[in-house]
Length: 129
Ligand SMILES: [Zn+2]
Image (cartoon, rainbow, N blue to C red):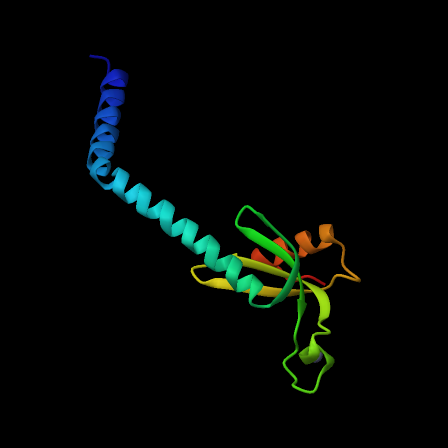
């Protein structure tokens, strides 16, 4: 047998063995559990965003959420405590082992497009001027 063919066969054997050893791990039960946990995580992440205030806009793209939220500052004497909320402000949310959120800025000065740009930069760990 040509050395080239022998090499290919050895490669196929190695990969086939790897697939066979992985197959029992990828059971339908595990896939279903992962799907349910993913759905539960997404619901909890939505809840976390809604806990921040009154959500007037929310969209998720590739694991990154951008939301416009009207918020309470927490001061008991403030107008927001009587329902006149602040904002709306842009926030970014993503998952990095744990839920992460970042304040982006007021919707009055930052467009949705710029909010997405800043959100992606924040997730990538880049400072935005
Ligand atoms: Zn306030």
